[in-house]
Length: 295
Image (cartoon, rainbow, N blue to C red; front, side, top):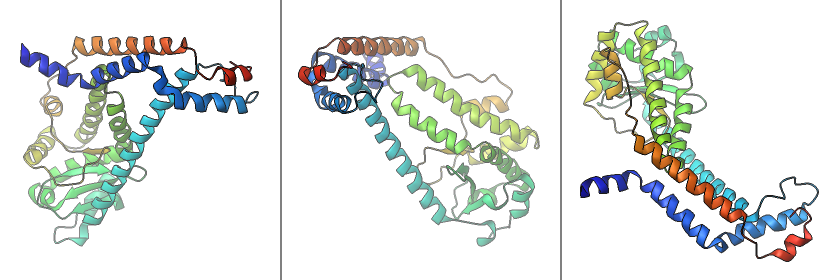
């Protein structure tokens, strides 16, 4: 029983942190004074131009705080993504640049063309990465380990990611995940979306290659983990239970726990209650508020 409680606390840590932070702000709204004061002063200067003067200062302070945190996450994630892409770009080359068979003809056949890059490593890996101009990366180890038909299956899987700009979609999914951590049900929905992106690429590949070929390629890369920089927006040939189940013809489902929905609703209700409480709190800068007719 104790282990179950510890496990639930770890699972819902973000939810608990948000609830405690909301309780702290509700008890001590003066913590938001700097942001609220800035908002009121801006309203006093822009009276007649800014149509949202009527929003309570503490509510605006909460919204501003959330936007600042979100912007920080976006900035860090974007820098991390760009740094990873830069490192991968320096470690990759075009197929003819390494002492391996030139796969350019196959890349042209499947529609990748000049966007195929080869990583000089023994680990078997393949992925699509890049935000505005995605490229397909395969390792020398994968090209040496797989048969030509299996390489074609891999490339057809990755070209689907490339055409649908899946790395960019996955980047935003990876960005939303930590921001939505207090709401466990959103995490489940994001996991479903990520799995569906990979399953869609598998289905596209299976239109051109037999299922046993793709399954064989998946098995061969299962025991290999490439040492590449971590990226938030990488779509690749990574084995997981959902993809294996789909290839075996089994129904694919990501477990949905009713506790996730309950915790998510509870956190949402608490946040709404705290915002309503803050909206009713008098602001200390009443003289300045009185000078602004919008309040």
